[in-house]
Length: 88
Image (tube, rainbow, N blue to C red):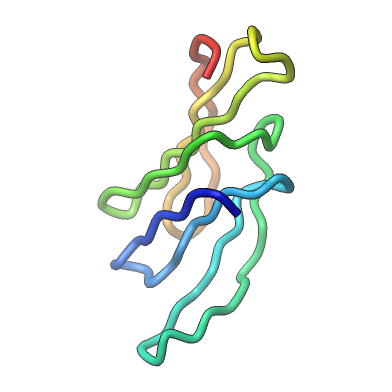
């Protein structure tokens, strides 16, 4: 895991990983639990950020010069359509 983003409304942590975006729960005693892994695009995730229950995930293309995408996921883990970008 390289990058993590916390959503205080859902008490979930979103963590980048080579197999996708990992979704973790956290409780008041700071116990973590893996809720699941979300596959997004190529799964070559370069960044994740959370704001007001919306998770933005930047995903690189297959090759460094390929176009990448940003996927928007609500904190309940529903993946929306990706927006195509330049290389990321």
